Length: 329
Image (cartoon, rainbow, N blue to C red; front, side):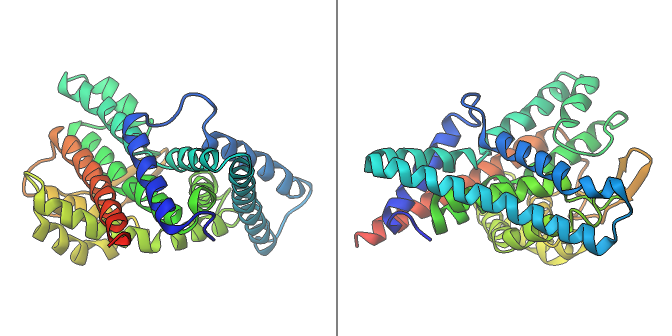
């Protein structure tokens, strides 16, 4: 459902990308994702209250998780639609401005860069303790004993994977339905990050959230892989042919149906190997290797991955400009 015309929506998506490049995540007012997170936490307490009074069957817990998913994404979409419509009723340009700003809050290219560079700078100063601390902010694995190649791997994997979640997917949904649909996606993605774990607590309760996020990211993840290949064709120190071959060879080995595509593409483009052993407390997870270890990973690979992420955003912005011009052709 488009609240605005196709050309208007394209212009607003383009403006939102530029706003994210310049401003990034807003410090004020409170970021919408924080409100979504609070809603999820409150709904989880309410929906799971019955589990504390007696043993709930896996089927019942799974149905409760379905309810959490539907309520959260429904609330995000409905509230966002009401806000944009109300602002458009006051004045069309207010509607444009509000729709653009909210789309920009679903993007995080600058935020990804800032988080990655927080890891890169200590590595550049040979300060492993700070690099471990900052990479621990963006990954769930244990980072206390990581050496530089493993810190780099964690950062590269996160930036590559989140090029889908933090840019391509929200832009795709913004183009399909403006800020309301982009915020619905962001709500689904936040659900996955909060309850979509395969542990004892969320195995059944988080099932619907994880699967819904997989469905929403299915096409954007594949678009991202293609865009990384295109960016690598023009990027210094990157290989488009190797990126494409890496996707074909390794993407399906990843446990996620989507994350393996951008991660394998980045690994191939840069010429490094990703994947390996991750530790989550007492749990050890051995992930499939992706890419070829043409050399040892180094801190510069973080910068290359950030450039790939920005390159994908430049490619999308350029595509929108061409689409707008074609509309007038």
